[in-house]
Length: 141
Length: 78
Image (cartoon, rainbow over all chains, first blue to last red; front, side, top):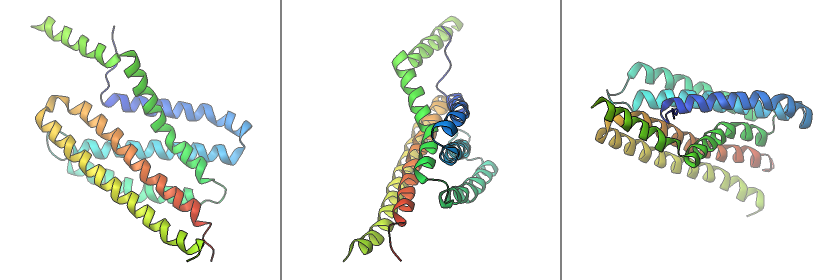
């Protein structure tokens, strides 16, 4: 069985899933929770996704085999720290947004990552992909 | 010391402790990830992913502390 790897594409798939979950949540949230609470959850979710994208860019530019990639590091750090934290602060200071709802949205991406990782662990997908890789390597030799 | 003054003292201390803890944890995680990549460069992709998820969780904890600060800040009277 062909399985997707738990490498760097796991993160991009998780972020895409989070985006879809947020988009699905928005109309139901507006109907059941109200406009501003669901907008707060949505904004928190978008903030979390963008934060994770820049965090992954930062980590990928620092922790790599060929040494630190300076331009990518500076670009990611300059955007992530001042701009993203400032926007987070602005979101928290907006009176119509309850910080709890923002936090729920922000935790959405982490919840999706946790659930996806738990699913992989329960289904044993990582062991299967390791077995597949070993079989391919054995076939080459 | 009344409740308001205690809250006004405890809130920044709490956020500072959260920041110190997450900074220490993140430093430790990055150090370990570097060491792991040095030992096994072919596993760099998996280590990076684990590192990113770990860093995101650590950062989220600090942001939770910050949000708690904002929530409780309103309870400090002027």
